[in-house]
Image (cartoon, rainbow over all chains, first blue to last red):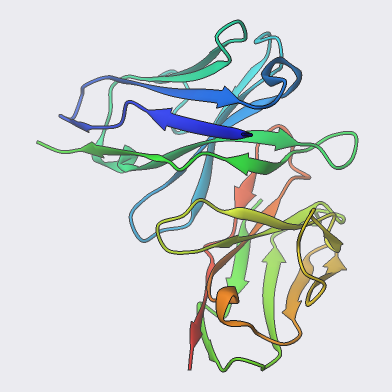
Length: 122
Length: 107
């Protein structure tokens, strides 16, 4: 079955760290850019970070640059998000998603995981 | 690029036709996607390229627009169509932005 399954979300104190994981199955993981997208409670979607097929290029939302690191292990078909210096504003459901590029540049996302909840609170 | 959706909430009856709007703060050409999200679920890609339906999307869903003004029309609402609809621009590569969402609820 073609799917993405996230894990690692939990309650963490402000200033703390957390590592999210996303396990891919049913498709050629190494052939796709991959992305993390988050959704704060009752809010809209927010793109967080993405990573090239071979892991050689990463991009980040300005507000997480320097605090979050996206990475991947193609041999394990897994995507990761290391989150440091967490604040209450990082509280959200975090989704991993597979990039679909309809034209030559620019992504949409055609496969999403079920999400994992990160709560930053004391 | 800031994406603004309207209305925030719309109440409709099954069988009705409804149009949702999305405006970009600057031209995104036709690099605009729509997603449907049901409670407790991940979003689902409906439309990309402003008007191309994704695989498996029923033809009652149609998208239009270019530049800064876009719309998503559902021609005859079915019970399974209720949820939140999000627009997303992908012209601002390598970063992307979404609208705040429009909630489609049963009247």
